[in-house]
Length: 386
Ligand code: ATP
Ligand code: MG
Image 1 (tube, rainbow, N blue to C red):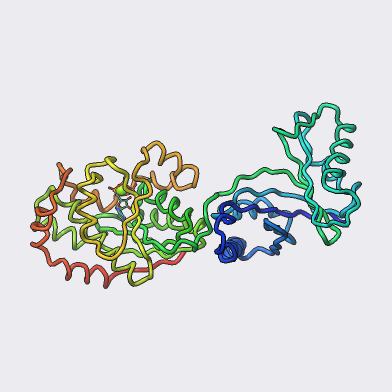
Image 2: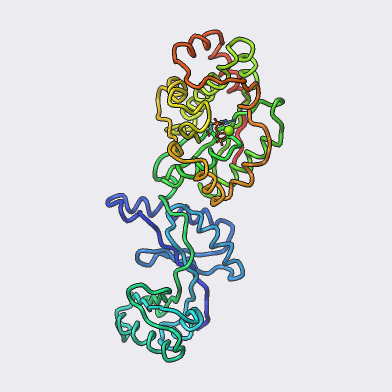
């Protein structure tokens, strides 16, 4: 039989979901299909895992990379499909076996008519391998390498090693939808990643103060959205100008309240956008105490304008170093550190309020036409699809 590459995909946590299992698996399957859109392939589901077959072997690496990013993927392995015949199986096992160290063979026999049972296959193939390479040793408890054989019902077998770690988490779409406040910084893309990893679909909103901020700042955010979209199976970025809002705050309110008041506008706009797009919560990249505006009092002030949904802050207890490590891992760091200005740095007060008092904030805000400014910002929203 001809050798054919396959990719075995194992999922995590989904099995924990009892009655919802069928639904979770369906969403996971759809997300896998979406990740592989435009690539020839077939996905089959023999017990407890997914097998991707019938793809162009010269694209294996790219396909693995796409699958690896799908939330819910625990691990994946590139394997070979061969005939369900001991000699053919052994030939493939030899190809993937390590040169030295400890190993075990683990067989899964779906075809109960296969002449040997799984323990016998382990012993037979393991024994042949030891005979061929005496520097190998069997260790069934903690082997350095596990050689898997999967004997299937249709007269074929899969031979593979565990190798690639997947993104983990839950399939995107199984935990509702959130509106991520996406700045050009390091934190908010990581916050989006963390929450999407728990199965939440994302929409993003970005606020800019063009022409005080430039077009490169916008392109940078679009690039971050594009990277996030690889994990979330697509997303919409809503781009909102807060230029006039900032000018009004600057003109009419105490200087040190700029960020506090701007945050409240961002929150109100995000909530209204959420209600319009079916998002059920707001997600930010705030981390307690990281900067002057990220105190619990600052959060009280911005939460106070949200009436209908929770504000999730997945990074609230993370150190900056931990967030940076995560940003590197998910591929957003290089883009985030490009040096373009965020709207929060426009009209930046010399001494921003660290512990804003809600009554003072509200008094300052009453000098503004809040509703009119929000309506105006809404009229200019652009939506970009990724
Ligand atoms: P980040 O690295 O995400 O920019 P930061 O440490 O710079 O975070 P702030 O600038 O205080 O922190 O912003 C806190 C959070 O507010 C951000 O994580 C983001 O969710 C939201 N935010 C800030 N600026 C913007 C913006 N221009 N557009 C959309 N959201 C924003
Ligand atoms: Mg920022």
